[in-house]
Length: 114
Image 1 (cartoon, rainbow, N blue to C red):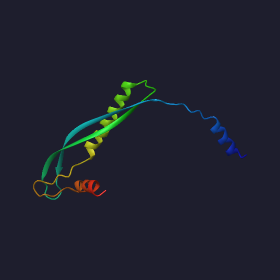
Image 2 (cartoon, helix red, strand yellow; image 1 turned 120 degrees about the vertical axis):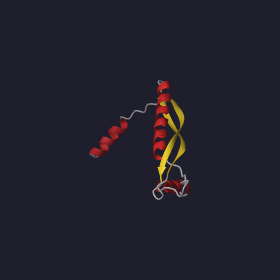
Image 3 (cartoon, rainbow, N blue to C red; image 1 turned 180 degrees about the horizontal axis):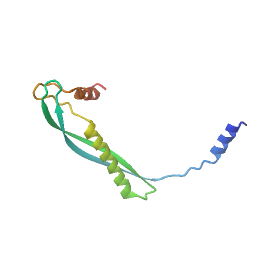
Image 4 (cartoon, rainbow, N blue to C red; image 1 turned 180 degrees about the vertical axis):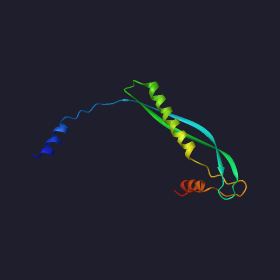
């Protein structure tokens, strides 16, 4: 038996499986932000409100930290929501010229052509 085979055999014999039980908590948060847009071509400025929601989860291994799991779920959901509100956009045409920005075109393609 080679040295690597012996090590592998020794490693697999030393594995101990420990059953883990617990619960999982979920949280959903909702938020809105006012987005400001300045058109590249016509120079018009306008605003629109964008709403998003996000979900997060938190584990409670061995049922020892119920409140902590709920808190972690909410923190993770809030973090995802903040990212979405910051980076996402809606496809809202310019009220003056009717065109949409390049960022909005990318968003429309992502949503409807993917």
